[in-house]
Amino acid sequence: MGAVGEGIALDVSVSDGAQAVLAVKVRRAKKKELSKLAQEQALVSAMERGRYSSLLAQISRSKMRKVEAALIDQASRMLKSMQPKEGTFLKHKELNHFMKWKHVTIPSGAEEVVQLCDGSADCPCNVGSAQPGELCEVLSDSVADALHGIAPGQVAPDQWLFQALVKAALAAPEGCVWKSGGKFLLTNEDRNQSPTAIVGVLERDNQESAAGKGIRALVAHTEQEYGYRVTAIQLNFHPNHKSSHKQHRDIYGAGQKGGINCTCSFMKCTGTVCYSIGSSRQILCETITDSRSKYETCGEECTGRKTYKWMHSGSAMHFNAPWNNNHTHGDLDASVWCLPSVADETSRAVSYNRGLNASKRVWGYVILYL
Image (cartoon, rainbow, N blue to C red; front, top):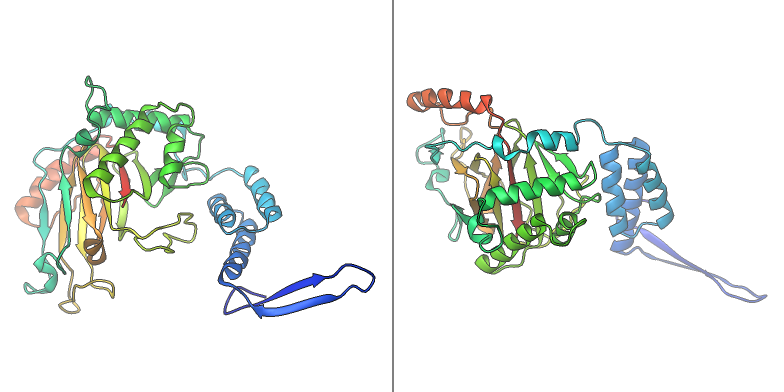
């Protein structure tokens, strides 16, 4: 019996006594039973492949879907005998080396730049919004506002939280700062990104840790400012200028997954708030013309509208669900300048880009899903 299609389940029972009766009931399988079977098959497949990250993810998902405990225990013993591959996580030595406040850099004169569609000046993407109610904004000093009364007065709030999060990452077991795409995430060993799980990592050795206080304050500020409950927290670590966060939409729908090894349980959400803790980074916000978007393409040559926004340390970027449906966003590899190829902009970019490549740029941000 497989997990594809409607599925058939057998309920088998044997009565007591000398005249025992075997009863077999054939029925259509329930959705939860099929999900459990599919997850069991995924766990067995991960054990056969023997890849650490895949096995860890499938063990976590198997626990949520109540796969047989004996199989989970077998997989867990196998996982303990394995080590993550080199480069798939930040070692404590690397965290100590890269994640230092003295490496933080803040460019001067960085402005928002808009690149219109190359296909047509009349392209619908050039309007700037596809439907009423879209919102995407970068707000300065948001971290200071959130940490008012929490961070000590003798140090900048963003620096205080940056150093507190690095300290918490160093206190967590190696492997808890793991690679996901072009950046690294700080989570517990199960890679759970619920608010409770994230705060639990930060307060594991100290219930009064600065990192825990800081993140709790960001959550409280966000919920008060926007009037929604925070459902997930993502702590992204960018150890140098080569790190990035690829273009994507945020997942706002229940039941969706971020990938084959994603262990998150997404809830219906209404927006995202991203706080920058560290040096500046350029964010690319790009129109999209797929079936979910309200934008219409101007033709085969449509390149969409691109907006390059700067997030400096201490700022926040907020966008809502309508904007998320019609745009993608991502932060760019700082070793590549991404302004349009206009002569005066290009010449300025070349001069500035040397400075970026010469410095060790670190950046982390806290993403709160509403």
